[in-house]
Length: 416
Image 1 (cartoon, one colour):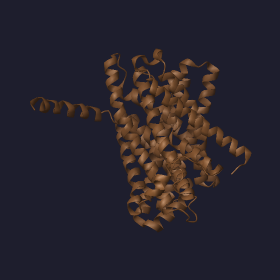
Image 2 (cartoon, one colour):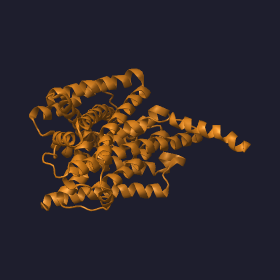
Image 3 (tube, rainbow, N blue to C red):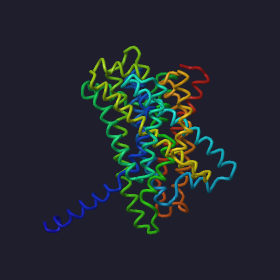
Image 4 (cartoon, rainbow, N blue to C red):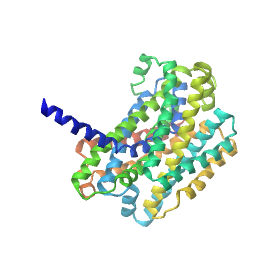
């Protein structure tokens, strides 16, 4: 008994020390609950009910695996994924790789600003273009916090916003719970025509996001530093598992909640093919309090994710081109495409869904190099991926590439 009592403080202390490492994965997890996710998940639930629940479950499992590998790469090598790629690619290939990464980052940033602008319109009736400008300015404040107060303060701010997002999108399920049978049926993998494949690609692109793969390696490295002691690195990597599992489980719950909310409350309701229509239907069906919670969750999603997206873009540029552009300057430049779309009057939900499809095509460019690097002993040393992890990683990559190929074939062939 004495030995058991003596062991308890050590166990508690060990868990307290692991909790202190929480943060980097929660920043990366914001990428998994951004406005693009909202558009894709609500569209899927409203149009097809519980049919594509399995896509979100599979995507979240992949996300846990991918983010753990990215964080492990940064901790084991002391370098981010873009930095390692920058050293291995020739000048021409490195520049081409950067171009596609910037296109993906641009699609990400566009989605975040548009989503935030839509949220301000829903909550306050603000026109989309001024709303986009406000979201851009607010994200500058968050990025300024990271620059002036350090990474921890930025992480805490993002974690608070993530909690707001969770409450905003999960609360509706308590008012109108989903059908258990429908949810279980939605776990069986299947499609119903080209549109469902398009939506699945959009949901996948919105969940396993390329910029989060690049970013997490830098976040973990910058937060914990690099130790020459293998034992210290091993402890850090083990603690990171808790960070990744907790953050991505929360993001997964929020994503699935969005789809279930749409399936249980919006199925067959006219006008739910847009976020504005979905918000109106949610407010009508579940009451104004849930409607406000929905809008606040969307606003927090847009604000947090656009800050993280800008941070990720700077990480990619710095690693591949060795060019360091101040975050606030980058924020101003990347704001332009989103404001142009808002000013042109393009339907925001359609723009969000299509942006996520583009992200899906960018995933292999980030994922395949990550899996190759974490599987090399000359790069990772004793922290090289196990055989099981290698198989899981390559299986994930194959599924993602395969889904994209199916999407191209179906779209070109015009089949439904």
